Image 1 (tube, rainbow, N blue to C red):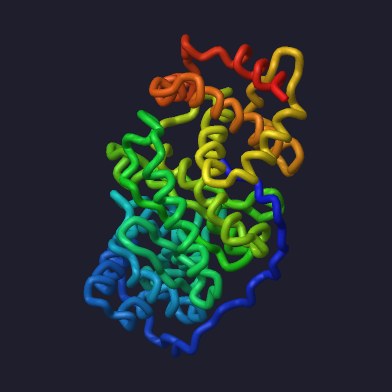
Image 2 (cartoon, rainbow, N blue to C red):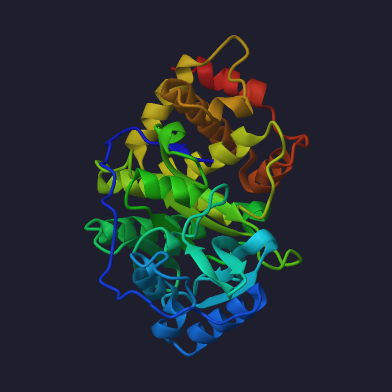
Length: 372
């Protein structure tokens, strides 16, 4: 789930990118789609951009082939295969990923003259890996990786925020919901609204005007392998004016989602997942904790605080969303404060939609609401 960004800056759409690659006059020779992907894998193995380019039909995607090739060279692994109905599928991973994921990244066309790549880049209806969306620079260390636009001037600032966020989540006692996390945090920085939409698999970014970032969870290429791969995708529409502290707050929240991605959230328990992420995020920010306490007080009723419904965290109503995050954060704080060492297990049970017998949120929240 995405954490609401409180400060918005609408960024202009990025200009179309191109390169000075020469047109490829030769027609590739392949009798079927499998031969195309075999030749593509051979080109990658041989580190031959010329062989890669020769697999396209005519001048297809000539303006983006070069930087996609350069991006591929930054990956720890990429293996291509032919999917259904002419799809070009890539099983790929970063150094920080425990296993590869599969992405639809292009098309293969076959005609009487043979088969060739007819397209590479974002595909309708699929989340596009950022390496086919924009030219990249890769920053980071062993625990944090930031994938930013090649010309992004704020990449180092986001890297610093991501490193602080990773450290905060690694140090947090989150119990069973964090056990499968390998400790790595990957952050993607799409360069504009269009790139963000491609990166999250949306038709446009219009539904994300109150979203600061979201955690994208993907199943491994080998469906029998766990846990899933999770990455944070930052929304450039809403984060352009964030301060360093706000960047850190946003990424700490999302890093909790990355760390807990292997544990499915039960229907009706979104407040547990979002509340925990927010509670960890505001732990180092007394000002934000106080602001959220004020918002939560406004939601107090005779019976204390009611856990927000799943739907409260969606849509584009920033007021409703902010209240839902604040209330959930306070409720999780009450559990962590009252249950002590037993809190991680109690949160784990609530996360799964089960009952935590030692948790009495009505009484605890009613007392909290009554306090000055």
